[in-house]
Image 1 (cartoon, helix red, strand yellow):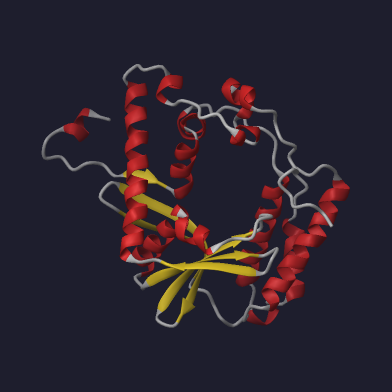
Image 2 (cartoon, rainbow, N blue to C red):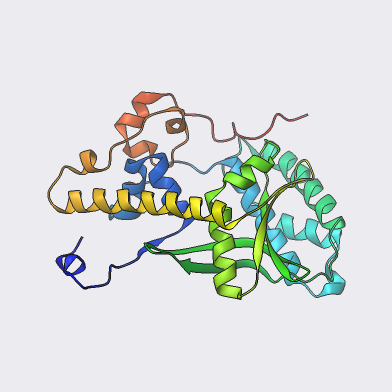
Amino acid sequence: MSAQLEMPGMPRRLFPATPSKLATFADCPRRYRFAYLDRPQPPKGPAWAHNSVGAAVHAALRAWWDLPVERRTPAAARQLLHAAWSTHGFRDEEQAARWRVRAAGWLTEYVAGLDPADEPAGTERTVGTTTGRLALSGRVDRIDRRGDELVVVDYKTGRSVCTDDEARGSPALAAYVLGVRRTLRRPCRRVELHHLPSGTVAAFEHTERSLANHVRRAEDIAEDIERATAAMAGGEDRDTAFPALPGAQCAWCDFRPSCPTGQAACPPRETWSFLAEEE
């Protein structure tokens, strides 16, 4: 931390954060250092098939809402998915092709249940807010209008069905609520996880208390980040200031090739291993 920021009477600089940035440090300080501080950034491992699926579905939905209302059809959604599809991370072309068909099925069923004329307040919209310690920002998949309020919608494509507890406990969704309020100047309490593979929706309506709890935890993480960064700047060993937290997550960490601790913790997973079992 700079001497200027410690001078009495000087305002304290807000810590610029995204939900992903804070979550990375909470999961593993070493991975945070690799991702946000080390330059040049250490090389990453291979792409993951489940990320390719999620990216294609998200891109297709974003593009679908950008179409004129009369062209927002299930067939158009399928075409957009095909255009966005990537084979990165799959075992082979045959597996990628099967999953493209599968994901297209989720997507067409999902958009068939949407009203094409029900224009969202935002898609892939960046929102932001400030707290006593943070300049917090994030990008929301979709912001719906529900009466006088706005609703945060997050698309999910993982193999596990989402739960209301996940919606309640998600730091990212809480940050989006605060960001939507500040950026769009409209009431916002409800968050929803739309799980396309199962066609289910998990939801939670935040209170001021639940949001304050999320803010407090986020500010605590930011304090830890600044403390570690200052220690490293003051000469502390980089690996000591940002220790690795070895565990099962080391099997799929992007920075596994650069982390001997993670390599020793467990063997790597196959890049397609997070896909649901194929029927």
